[in-house]
Each structure stands twice: as structure tokens, then as C-alpha cells.
Image (cartoon, rainbow, N blue to C red):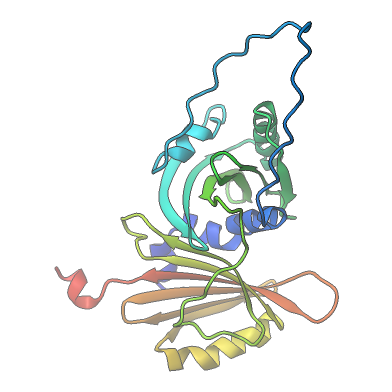
Amino acid sequence: MSGLTDRTGALTRWLGLGGLLALVATAVVLKDPPAPATALPAKPPSQPEVALPPAPPFPDAGVGKLMRVMPSFPGAVMVPMGRLMTNGSPMEMGYFDTDHPPGEVLEYYAREFRLRGRNIVTQDDGSGGGSVNYYDERMGALVAVTTIRAGGATTRTLVFPSLVEAPEGIHLQGTAPASLPQPPGVVTVLRLDEGSGGASAGSTTLTQVAHGTPAMLAEFYRAQMPSRGYMPSGGRLAKGVELLEFERPGERLSLTLSPLDKDGPPESLITFVMERAPLPQESNR
């Protein structure tokens, strides 16, 4: 394994390989904002009015909106991960982990969202995790919580609350970077661009679906990437999933090719994690 794994960090990998996929799956049903609710008829004059508590302050735009709208999970502290861009829309994301199973975490947020009168959508990722979300018409944003079951010495649940600003609804389409070769018939589902500073500044996560098995697509990329200036720096096969790594001056790229479980011709899920690598003269400063 090259230095890429050590430098990218576990969070970027989890997001590229799992967390974002659950968000994509739930957003499918929200390609357009829900229609505004029909106004209820006025109460009869004889019916007494009920005094309601004042509504909470509406979150202002800008960094920190996620922290204000997301319920706190008991015993956990959410760490802000900064601003990103998802298919051209501003996005905020946070992170925390817990020893509670993913199902308990999702049930908690589903209950909290319903108590706020939200029409929620849930999605099981098939690997013990999943997500729950709702579209906020007033704020023009998709509010979501994605969970991933992480194994190891102790089993933990990784939790990624997120908020995507999308006044016109969530649209699952994006544009791949021009530097990447595109297999015939490939569809770009999601693109995330890191918008905050720090070590991950300038990174991009890209999710696509293409015809062919992981092995077929791996051969395509091995043949095409050198012509784009990328040289192979690592790779392996694990349970039918092809993992490839490439580098070129100023950039590192990891590529995961996973088979999709479906009828008909084979298709694969493609996940790119592109990161800016310091040039030699930059690292010596």
C-alpha cells in the first residue's frame, strides 16, 4: 500500500466508499422538492384557539447551519467537517462515532425528525448501516444522517450528519473532472468538492455507475490513466472489489470498483477520491 492510504485519512475513505452512497440512495426519491402542503381550512369560530409555543429561530445561512438544525445524539459530540460542494450545491457535514448500533442511531433521528413534523425517508445500505433524511422546503435543503457499521477490535458506528443546500431539490447528476477517462455509457451520480481549508483542501470524491465488471473497468483505467499523466502506485483485489491507486505531479487518486447486485448485464459502482499532493518545492518550504 502506498502513502495514499495514510494521507487521505479514514473519514475520506468512509465517505467515498459508503457514507455518500447511502445519501445518494435516499436522495433518489427527492429529485424535486415536495409540493407545498395544502392550506388547512380555518377553524370554526366556536372552536377555542390553542396557544402554541414560539417556533425556534430559523437558522441563518452559512457555516454552522448543520450544527443548529441537527438534534444532538445522546452522549456524542459532533465534529464539523467543514463546507463541501455536492453536484454544485453547498454542503455541510459533521461526524461522530458511537457504540450504539446503526439501527438505534437511525431510529433516534427518525423519531426526532417526525416530532418536528418532517416527512422522512429511510434507506438500508445492506451492510448494517443506512440513512434517514428529509427535505426542508422552507430552508431549501436536504437534511440527512448516514450511518456506517465499522468493524475492528471494537465495533463502532460511524455517523455523518449532513445538510445539502438545494432550493430546487436534489438532482442526482454531476460533472466528472476533465482529467479522468470516462468508460462508455458511464453516469456520474455524485460529486463532492472539499470547500474548506486544511489538509483535505482541493479534494474531490466522485461516484459513478458504468457497464462492465470491476475487472473489465480496471483494465480500462490501467490502459487509459497513463495517457492522462497518472502513473499506477498501488492496487489490489478484495472480495471482487478492485482497488487501484494512481499519482501524478501534485495529485493522488484512489479508485474503487465494486460490482452492483442486479439482474441483466453487469454494472459496477465507481468511486474516485482525488487529493492534491504537495509538489516537492512546496514540501521543502
